[in-house]
Image 1 (cartoon, helix red, strand yellow):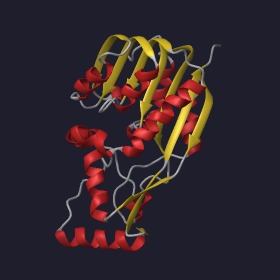
Image 2: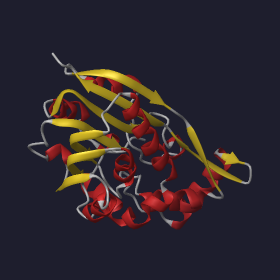
Image 3: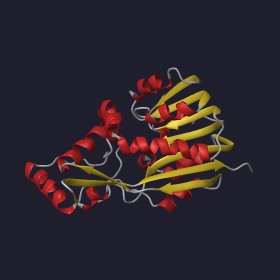
Image 4: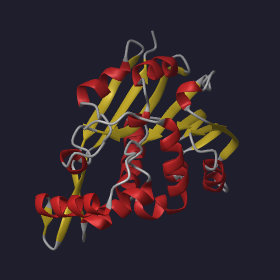
Length: 260
C-alpha cells in the first residue's frame, strides 16, 4: 500500500541514519556518480557560478560533484540540520569559494537561491509532497541555459515491501517525472535502471533500510508474530541463491532552463 509522506518522520529516520548512510547506501552512491556523468553530458561548465543542492544528507553527491566541478557559491539544503557538518567536510579543500547551508523542508524554503547555474539532487525528489509546484518555483531560480539534474526512484522501487502489504512511497512513472520540466525547462535526458540487490536474509534487508533511512512512511510497530510472518513471506516470495533480493529503480533526469 502507498504511504503518506510525514516529513517529521522522514527527518527522524534520516537523522538517525546519517552516521551509517554512506557506509550502506551503495545504490545511492552509484546514482550520484551517474548523475554527475549526466551533468557532464549536458555540457555544464567545470567552473560554475552558483550551485544549489537540495537533500544534501551525508554529502555523498556533494563530494562527488566537487571532485569534478568548482563553484563561486554553493547552497546546500537538507531536512536534517545535522547535514551541515557533512557538507562542510565534503567541500573542505575543494574549489568552493562560499558555502551557505539552508536547513529545513525545501518545499517551504522561500526564497530559493536565485541566479543558479546548476541545481542538483540525489535520491530526494520522491520525498516532495508537490514536486510539480516545487519545480515551477525552481524554474524561476535557474538562469536561462542553466541545468537541473536529479535522481529519484521509479515505480518498481522496493516493490517487494509494497507487495507484502507494507507502507511504501507513491513512486512516480517516468512520464510524470519527465513532466516536471513544465513550461520553463526543456528535457535533456531521462534514464532509468533496475538494480536487484542481494541480501543474506530478510532481516538484513530491514537492517539496510534502517541504516539508510529510506522508508520514511512506515509507522506501525510489529508484534513478534507479525515480524516473523513478514520474514517468512519475504523469504518465500523473493529468494535469490542463498538469500533474498531487494529491487531498486533509479531514475536520472536532466532539464535545461529555456532561453526564451
